[in-house]
Image (tube, rainbow, N blue to C red; front, side, top):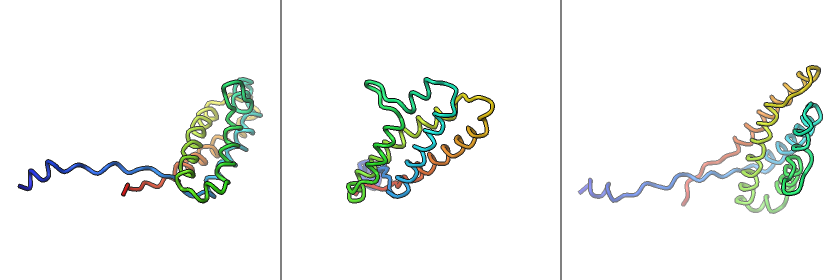
Length: 140
């Protein structure tokens, strides 16, 4: 009897991942905008500078996207709607992961290596902060 009952029981759905803390997300995104601009100015590769700073047709620049996400994070809708906030943070994390990959492999002149090391360290920390905003919750 117990075996039959256990065989028909379904497992609970996996926990959904929500992101919270509007203030931390907004300030971290703002810091990442600063780091992206700083990295674009110290690199010796103009293609990477263009990818970070300049939008082209059909491709939004990383800094412009982060500016847009920052405005969304600071909006009243993010304060009132936790799902909107969570989706905005998740979108920001995707781009910050790409930016972190670019910064970690950034070519710079030898006189700017120390500045790049500082940017890399801060970018890794900012990405870890954003990832730490995940709040796993079980659906009702």
